[in-house]
Length: 448
Image 1: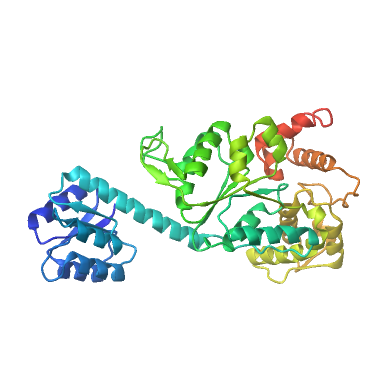
Image 2: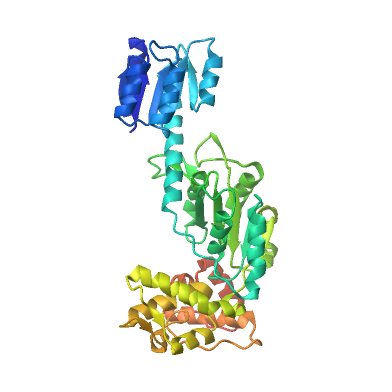
């Protein structure tokens, strides 16, 4: 339901417009001319103004200028007599959503145009909320030389609109990198919207991305905007792109190629003005070779690939990261004086962190809860490292990535009591990814 103001010096037209819009449940106020309408705008808030262009005392263009000052977020539709289209176009240049020519064909045309104007207002309001409510950008903390090429690449590509593909193990900070890229770009004042393809059921992911119309499927009792629509003008981050089904990948490809799409169950074509950033923690060449990621979609997304190193390859960053993250944990818990004792620092530095930064955060959260005072000691860090085991020293350089990965999976499965979904959650990967890895290691690890 919206609040709508109708301004026209013809009583019959005002009544026609009001009755047509009230059938949709809207609250409609009427004004006999531009001056009365301006007074109403000064007293009350409206979502939509429908105004005639030719009115005594104050015409529609003057009212439109006043409306932009009084209520800049309100949408405006102008009504003009046949032959005055040039004036209507001028009104649109001043910010009107659209115009209607007299005589209005019927209530259906009016209601449809009003619905679209209100939809646009709601979308812009949602975008503003997304910008206001977005979590504070986590600092891209680094000092290790292994991170210097990553930061430099982010700075350079941020000046462009090129698609970016972020590669790296789970927990290496791919979303932090994506948010940093957004913050450094010309789109920084528009929304940053993220979707984790592994965390949304396949049956819902299409609607989540593209939105849906009322009645598009069972349970779709009203129209809903998709995440792409909410990201308009900003950055759209697709995390775990390798978990998306091939059929949905084909639909996404069309959006990247044509920048156009339709909601599920809809026929109206929408424009997608977003900067695309995708990420995966799976081996990209394996994804391509097995067909889990379409080759054509890969080339669209990988305009500028950036690989984030795991925490074990940027060991100089572990201590400053721990300090920063502990401060964030302390702020969340209302304990702003938390510090790391010397033995805790040493244990953190020696740990291998197969879960990377995400695991470090979890370890510090648990340690803060276990500690009675403000000092985190080594004993508080015993119940960490992937879900229950004692902290282990960092592996030697001779350990292979597969060995580290296999052991992390075993630890997560053990901590989850053999529950694969819980283990996948602990590892920060999709369930299908975990199944793929278990299949690969079947001869090396027990079936759960």
